[in-house]
Length: 176
Image 1 (spheres, helix red, strand yellow):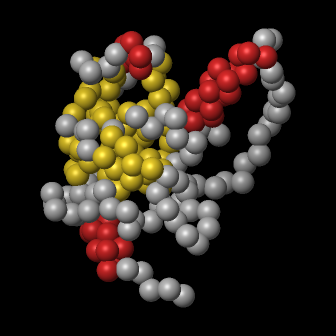
Image 2 (tube, rainbow, N blue to C red):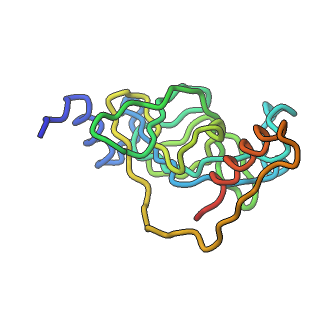
């Protein structure tokens, strides 16, 4: 089997130690997505374009410090031998305060956070990292099959894209 790179070994050791040093590689795992009303989110930068309902990723910071407005590589669940990041993007962070979410600038390793800006990624779980040498963490696979299968289609064929986008968002927010 191929040997892991020096960069990956550094990341592995930081995650194993839950290193919250500012110089440590940043790694966070988004294990699920939460659907919330915009009224529950305290953030002056939210705009009408963000919509009335938001999807936030529920993440645990495993090493380093996750920061609002920094760019991170997004890794979907590992599916094959070659792992490439899905893309790189900026995020905003929130802390859970009862039923509301409060915007914060930084979350250190060992803590939980809500992550905004991931709702259009077609993955049920993600690994965020500031290092492209990172490897994705696997989401849990319970082998659960749906109890009900339904066929739906829009009344107007022109609304197919809107329906598909809504179903994708629902799929992210649905725990099953």
